[in-house]
Length: 204
Image (cartoon, rainbow, N blue to C red):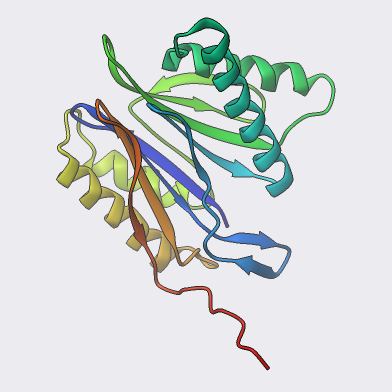
């Protein structure tokens, strides 16, 4: 029951995701970070099949780094989104990846931006977006409470509302979420919202 959602605020973009690694009826772990720091000023939140998600997001990350090493300048957020969309479209005709992506970034001359990329290589620039079963609740909360130019405090409050709604309404709700932001100071982890922690295995 995955959920990834994000929004734009005043001078920043935010991406939040659940942290459950699930297969069939089993929860393997509840601290899986599904929001990758793509480079110094980009975040990539992904949902989908675990193998596809990890392989594809790492592939995109390494190619973004390779471009910067070769050319001496980082890819703009729009360029990274279009590259990601192109790779998904290419794979769609060969060996498709079941991965949905929210790509957030901050560019010096443009400011923050957020891109919605789904598994069939649809690309849209958005102010807010969500994927997964939790998106039914996150999108409805954002439709009601989101407005352009939100402060960081208001945005975090909205994210908390979305998490509470998902936990209380989704039949098999993920317990933990990670929140990351990107602004002029770079991409970084902001907070975790945990209701359970993975217990370590005690020695026999």
